[in-house]
Length: 77
Image (cartoon, rainbow, N blue to C red):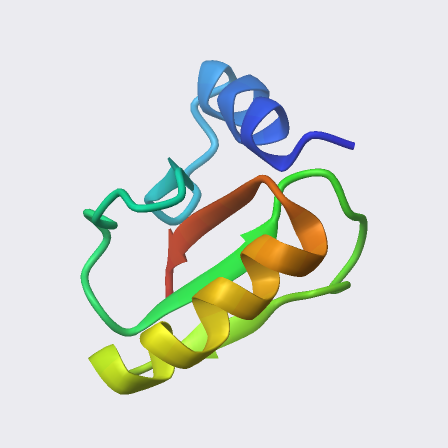
């Protein structure tokens, strides 16, 4: 499963979803806090983490990048 690709397909059908973007190591995330970080390729809620503060983001992001590689950030709804 590719969650970013799934979001693009849903957007083509005009179904609203929270704002999201792929996360690249060392690149600032443009989605404002609070946000949800999730592996792009894992299913269900595997590896999903919420960050409400810059400190939480700094804690969870490196661990998720190390464990899962490709990540996406999504607005918390």
